[in-house]
Length: 477
Image (cartoon, rainbow, N blue to C red; front, side, top):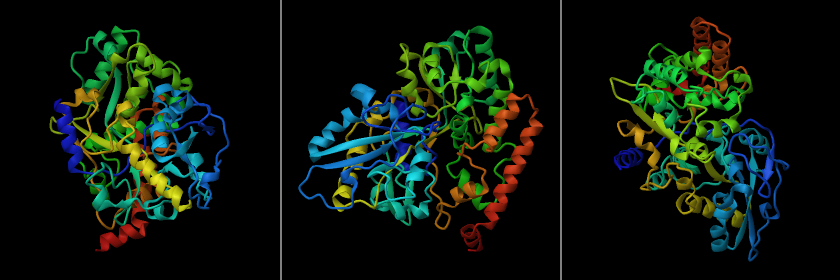
């Protein structure tokens, strides 16, 4: 279909930096491969973090059947996942390589695994947490190849790359600048065309309120530590520029300026949250697990989520045909844009035996090239030239792009400034600006309160940027 041709061309032409993985995490527990259901963001699990296997030891196991421990955030794809489970899927790899793969799942993946990485015991293959600075990748992970070689084969090869060396390969990708919706709810509300501006989006939510029994927009505020970060994924698409973040950095611009993508995206979030008639009755008790079935059945109309959520919503009830995905309601000179983005990248623990490290590399290659995981998830495959998912039909008039790689001398600097300033574009701590904006909106505060939050973020960002030694060296030329 047309969208496949458009997206394939876009993905082939450019590679992007990471945006954060699909969804966030809310609990602080782990699971073994023996018992799990749940999902990649909020499933209840049970086992001790940091558990390792005999095959994880540094000794060489020549001639023996090796066991590979793989850490994952996809607790919904562990033992109880049936034919779609990681265990079932991995049997082919185990047979071909005479090995056993044991999965260890985490609902608070980034938090738990980051803690484990203070030791050498953090599995054999793992999704690399975004808390690891690019400059520190070589301290934890085995090199997987040069960027120049791998960029021809894989999308997003630079996500976990430093100084030309790749340490992690994305396990799948998604369209980050979009919104999940129930197509029947929107049609029942009398909406015949999807919104291309923020005013149209708000007007459509009001039509859903007035003409259906569905909740127009579900905030998922109870899981705000990760659900509000989904709004951050709209920024690049709203900007319409693959160089947007690089331009802000190079030109020493404020993050939040009227008309700018960061400003306008979170202004829209404020506008939705501030209207109590458009959201769930009690956002404080919203339920991520429950909302999946609710949007499938038509009790919820709309949620800002990455395209990774499409398959989860479709599988949560009897009406998968009603789950749709629309472009973010922003236009630049009348044109809509959409960003494709990488999910977690997989790396190999450098502290393992040579046999385990080689087996880990084989596992990553198999996972992204042969496992079929991305296709089952309705995701964009890492391997270039693969088929695109059908649900992107609504994006047929969008221009797709991938975020530009940072220029030499600024690789990793954006994330350093974001972390050190504690602005936290993707962070979910209680003091984060996204939660502050949501709380102000839910409390009925006017937009002047949001302007103060924007100004504080700009001040902290700019001060941290100007104190960053790598940045100042780059600017000095």
